Image 1 (cartoon, helix red, strand yellow):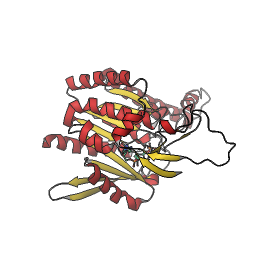
Image 2 (cartoon, protein in one colour):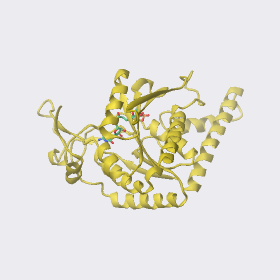
Image 3 (cartoon, helix red, strand yellow):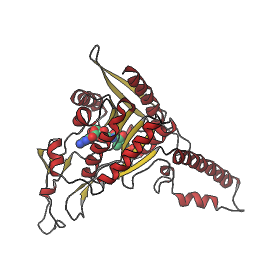
Image 4 (cartoon, protein in one colour):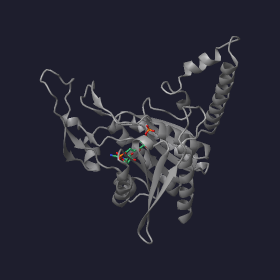
Length: 327
Ligand code: PMT
């Protein structure tokens, strides 16, 4: 695949179709934001998971972006715990706050039930493990119920990069009424290239012609219009994922210079669960400030481990508070 044309954000929205239920989804967001505003709550939009790029209109094949949604789902829980309301915009079937503790791949719920079902024959180790699992479930359930009662979590789903960009624009515009009280936490892994509708084959691409050549267009970088047009004074946090750690800081600095938002959090693929770097631009004097945040690696896949998102969110709450205070 070779790189080709790049769309401006306006050209993109003028030519690529909006998701069918967009108006309905946004009506829900408007109502949610108004309710949180009435209760004087800060609201954070958390984007999470990877976007897909379909290759056919009747889609059989698509390109996907790496992300399990761990960063977004875990962070959302810590924001909720801190009293923020959360709009959780995530890739369908990626991890979600609370239910993530019993995801099919990391901690299958059936295994949890099997642990419970050990019965009278269970040995001491089995019983202790079951009791511990009970306590964990109770803690998760209690936190989840508290959020349900408070009505502070609103969930939206996307699959394709089209869904993501249309939703991101519309939700940002709705949330901008909160001005500095709104935070945008962009942890989703967004496709850099896509196939415009106009170039897509209607039916399944046939394999009879041998190798496949596809020329994709560049997805517009929406952080610029997001900063300059869609949000007013919002606190915008973007993530930068690299596999070469040496690129993190230069790329993060370049993003801050190009888009003018508040913070870039850099993470390297393999160490992202134990260290990240916060990069910020100070205006007087004009400098970049970097600070690393690290936690000790977990000794094993034990149930009770420290999650780096707890510290990421704590640090952002502090910075957001200061940002609100500066106004
Ligand atoms: O979900 P996990 O498995 O826990 O993984 C989490 C993560 C590694 C995916 C996450 O921490 C992360 O780094 N996400 C950002 C990935 C990335 O490098 O994105 P990017 O360089 O394509 O984009 C940079 C930022 O701009 C992102 O915040 C993205 O949401 C935003 N963006 C990008 C392109 C685009 N067209 N529009 C955007 O808004």
